[in-house]
Amino acid sequence: MSDIIPEKRQRVEDSSKVDIMAGGEPHVNGKSATNGGSHKWFGDEPLESNDPEIHALIIKEKIRQKRGLELIASENFTSRAVLETLGSCLQNKYCEGYPGQRYYGGTQYYDELERMCQRRALEAYGLDPEKWGVNVQPYSGSPANFAVYTAVVGPHGRIMGLDLPDGGHLTHGFMTSKKKISATSVFFESMPYKVNPETGLIDYDALAVNARLFHPNMIIAGMSCYSRNLDYARFRQIADEHGAYVLADMAHVSGLVATGVVANPFEYCDIVTSTTHKTLRGPRAGIIFYRKGVRKTLKNGTQVMYEIEKPINEAVFPGLQGGPHMHAIAGVAVALKQAMQPEFKTYCQNVIENARVMCKSLMSRGYKISTGGTDVHLILLDLRPMELDGARGEKVLEAISIVLNKNTCPGDKSALKPSGLRIGTPALTSRNLTASDFEKVADFIDKGLQLTKEVVAASPGPTLKEFKETLATNPAIVAKVNTLKEEVENFAQQFPLPGLEHM
Ligand code: DSN
Image 1: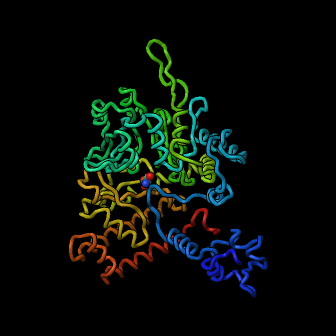
Image 2: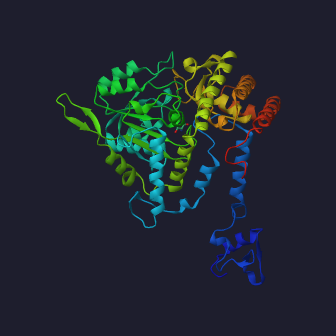
Image 3: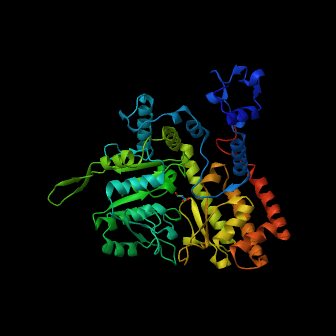
């Protein structure tokens, strides 16, 4: 016991599974806890007794997921098989380097595993290994994008991405007039393109005009909140005027691309990045596809080759990352295999169908949907006609166990007061909700937003603080919130939580 400091001794004594033998020697399951065997310092104790506080929070979160309606467009419920890889022995090992060239011993199974993931990634997207390569090591989408810019355009290279308030992503070069917010606008020169504030559709003509002034090295075709197919052919055409690369960040739609239910970026783009946990339903990780072989043939017949494979791989490791997260890479491999099953295509078709059903249902109740519809897994609800804003809508919906996020709408003057709500269907479709269930979800959203109007009316003043206080304390409002929350939770609990029901 001498090697256990008093604070640790206290924790041992707190554990219900440990009995203190005469002399203060902790024993677990009859074996000495300080002398090998299954003692808690050895690491064999279940979380529940080893760390009841963290365990309790996980249980609370699981209950929240089960009782709530998860509509965040970028989230999903991954499978039990993927969760098993994440909690497996693969989490223990360092594997810096690439298959066949590691900086650590003991990596023989990891080489096999990473190669398998690479093969499946190319297969899932129907890519010829002679023409495309893939790096499966990025920790997530943001580092994947940063690695691509580092490798392909270099420091202060010029990038053009959809502006964040117009539905783009932070890592597509986001900055404001006051501040370079994303490091991608600090280390690279960025100029945004926008959507048309009237239609909500990407203004490709304005992009073409601005590209002629900016002469980008890369144009990014990707989004975080845009409900229409991207016109990759048009991006290609605009980029070609400047010899620029086209990077598709297909993070949101990667499952939908794999199953061919939305436009395919691989036809027109040079590089494609993605996260793997959104519509693809895998673990939290990132991936980069890059072209190989001939980039273009000049008029004199000379072939210009793609020379991005080595720079991209070197940018990921050792440029920006250390050891790859092999447990996550194994999870990506599992998700990619699942994505090639016919059932996954049905799932993706349902994701889009359910988004359309919600869209129609909300529009029939008089709501305004940006772009007037959807081709993908999300819709953007514009609350300006209701004289509401996204922050207030999000708060009330959260109070009734509907989780989604506030979002700017085309033409919003301030990103600080977004006037819309982004609503996505991937997660609830994974919980087996069908079109008629999504009608019901639309009905709950409608009730929640009508209640939001009541909270605004009952607030003593116009600030968000006053609004939140009213929501939390006004007895009539609290009673309505509780009734609606109970209805939502009773409905949501009928549906299974993939991967978690057995735990
Ligand atoms: N933050 C994610 C989203 O919600 O769209 C993208 O990385």
